[in-house]
Image (tube, rainbow, N blue to C red; front, side, top):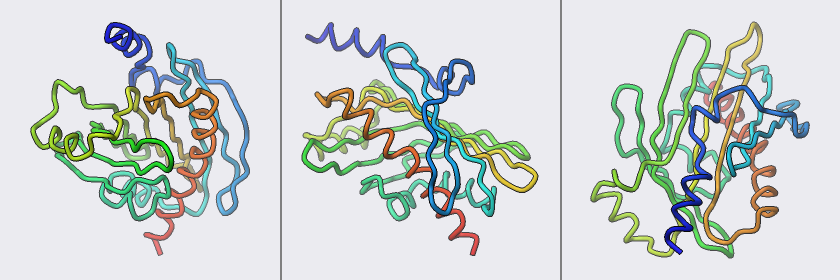
Length: 214
């Protein structure tokens, strides 16, 4: 059983480099979102993982405020409707951010994770990508979080990115993710959940950036 689990993780875990590579993405659907505009959703298979990208050219939003919101780890519980009830900054050094989040999930078991984010900033482009912190690097504080929530599941695949590119009169907002929640959730249910949350996450990011710019 353990060998099967290790084999699954070895095959199914894509890298952040795979995710951010623009090759292989195909248009999946188009979503019209109130107060935002059109969001294009793309799909890409990386190994055994189905990854998704939502992208929208957004007007009337501040590039700087988008950056602020994406880096505000603790603030995620206030503006996101994803169900994250705890979002804690663990450490920050130069362009690396490590953080913990706890996701309250109805009916099924809760999820939580430890992520390492990397920030890259240029004059007109901002990138914030994240991936799981390996269990071999867990600190005592992280292990205590696991003991505190013994029934919560740590997803075996959990990586993503926010990318903002300043245009002449708009900002190109991009949100990409590869996730597997762990447990025995059917593939079609996972896909439905992802397709529902992708546009919502983009909209809420933009709306919070607008609110902070008022």
